[in-house]
Image (cartoon, rainbow, N blue to C red; front, side, top):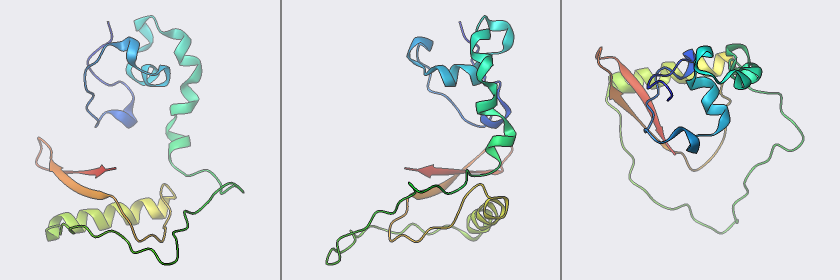
Amino acid sequence: MLPPYICHPLLQRFRLVRSHPSNWPKHLLLTLCPRSSGTSYLHAFENVFSKASFDSLPECKQWDHAIKLLPDSAPSTCKVYLLVPKEQNKLDTFLQENLDSGCICPFKSLMASLVFFIKKKDSSLQLVQNY
């Protein structure tokens, strides 16, 4: 039986929907299983989950692409949800820090995904992206 907690420091803030471990991908099991849990074969792939490889994006390759919309098509309309100033400041800080560190890169798109915040137990805000 796998432990109900997350061992990998990069994933400690995420919550998991409990399901049977046989349904989980092997790369996820590595992050969830301590070395003593009998899954030593997964720890050969620890470099995939290293903090160093997480801190930057890979170099742009020739297969990077853009989705080109039809010239006469109109974007679909949707409601814009405004953030309160505290949330907007937190989002701006998150975006600037991650742009500066290279974890994210700017893009030009007419579409975006919803972001919102949930309050954590210590009353700080946790950014959530709804894809």
